[in-house]
Image 1 (tube, rainbow, N blue to C red):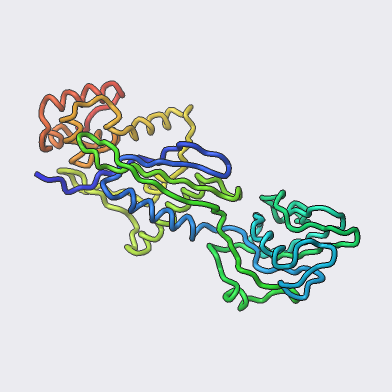
Image 2 (image 1 turned 90 degrees about the vertical axis):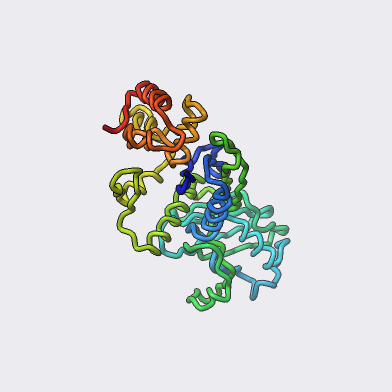
Length: 334
């Protein structure tokens, strides 16, 4: 008897995390699914997470973006390039224009913008220009808006801009870098299962774990829209199909960090324990893996009859499982 089910992976595991970067792992992916999920997640992370970007700017004293300014080392074009390296977080949803006015000699940074409490400057130390003369003056207005991905100026020109403002390519994504790696791992006797490692760097407006969670939810929403699903039906061996609501599916995608002091949460963690992480014989583990049983929670949904019907599973394996479940305070379904 050959398996007709695809083994499900583990939940995301945090390898390292800071407010602006994070590395996460998924283990136990079926062969080939590391690249399938990794590439999809990376593309969604880079293109579909909303953020804040500069849509237009005005440099007082510069007639166009190739003009020069008296007493300022950089020309208007270099100032624009420096502005593109600055990162902002718009607190509201409506576009906002903020202003920078500098008259003292020295380097002018993004932190000198007057935000009025509606914008957070995420890179306050980013240089914008250098005033080299006592008579030099730099005054810049920039308009910030929220959006997705990158929108070229040709499309933004269609939108209404304030008089004197020059439209620029808008980079909205809060992601500075996203990548993934796939390596093989052992599950039972097989060594071709996948371990997926996702790395995310952000501008600080969103934490990497929140961005990863949003990307997964976007993927789920796309699939649900395609299939027009109101609920998911999951067949269980030798039983009637079990219906799982969308709310249950979404609960599976909630934050990785829970309240460990809660007894309910402790039991949930037990049910999520992978069978390949507990002490089971290779024969028993292979039989369960082939049947698509990967967690303790999935195991207790089976009756003794269900398990004895599995290929390669016998009375010895049944006793072994009962002993393991007894240690957890659990039992097979009656």
